[in-house]
Amino acid sequence: AWCCGKPVIACKNTAPGSYITNGQNGLLVEYGNSKELAAAILRLLRDENLRRGMGEDGRKQVLENYTWDVVAKQIRQAYQHAIERHHAKGKVAK
Image (cartoon, rainbow, N blue to C red; front, side, top):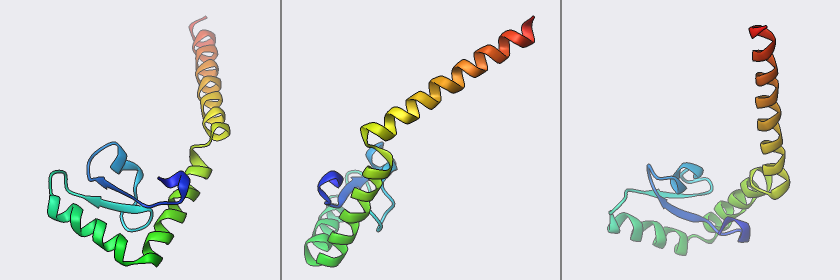
């Protein structure tokens, strides 16, 4: 949804919910609370500016943190850090 500039509704205390800043790039609701989910859906349907703003913030988050280039750079840095730690351990052990 964020890639398309759309806001997200997710449950609190879940993996998808951990990416959302409530009220900024999406809405969080309690798991199993259908009334809260319905209220969140209606809130977005009724407020075009809120919907657009949350979608734009979500898209910005995707472009800054989850593109192939960004993820590849993070993986490269993780491997580099692991290699450096491995080499440092080897020097200490000698």
